[in-house]
Length: 304
Image (cartoon, rainbow, N blue to C red):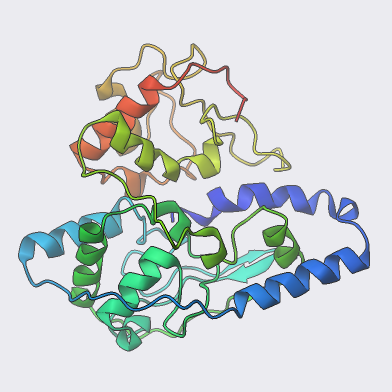
């Protein structure tokens, strides 16, 4: 996940505009819609998937868990996957990523059920996940999801209870109003998943990887303050090839940014940038992402 803060930025806007939400009837309607949706049963059959013991497949899964999907982030499932720290998000929610080691949630998931969860955001009981950002990486190929399914059972089991996750009234309203994604399965295409092409250094593959960046840097990746965020919140940078962004950057500059958290001018990135995960992308992924960013129309900083 990419760290939770990136996806909470949009929701901060709600905290500054509670009065604009409208009447009690409006709130009640949105809460009812959320509760109905989160309890919906998705008739998505379990796929015919069996984990692989091929060391190369398992290693691919480890790579994806630690880099692209960022499962090991401190605000996701943690470095050992035993569960992340509990995040109190004001009146929106209390969020804690669960223990997904073989001693945790993984103990009750079959290979097929885990694959379905990763592709569709649907739990073992056929209902929606809460908050886990499947919508950010559901484009991964069947082979890559199978690699993740193959890797997770190999991690060290950790005995640790799951923390609390509670979606509060305002969180439900914001989810149903198009803000922060808390009802995950509703935001994932089920009939025709939009899958990435095979990994390559192409800008086409990079466009899928760039979806991981839009939560912070905006849909157009030109950065700027996140709407409604407090002044103390990190301001995402411009990732387009504009003079205020990446114009004149080389791949070496970009690689240094991802791996060391240092910009071309020598300035350190804000600690909210998940370099502990994105820095572990391999050269194919980094070069594809860079190729996509360089192919974007140059936009001035702040266009989001």
